[in-house]
Image 1: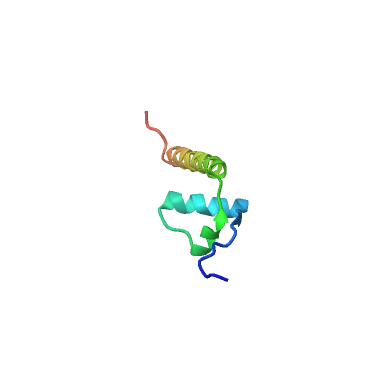
Image 2 (image 1 turned 60 degrees about the horizontal axis):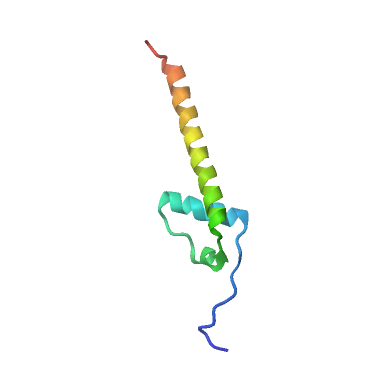
Length: 74
């Protein structure tokens, strides 16, 4: 048995896809264990779009909350 034989890669769970995309958003490298799973581009694109939409929605809610507390003296 050769040590250089690649081990078969298993499909990524939804949680592993979310972790991979989140680490990409934050710019940090994921752990070596996560590199052993197979991520399909479609999974990454869908989770990335949902993550970006969630981020924008949270920012909008935060801005609306802050503006309602301080009032708009227009």
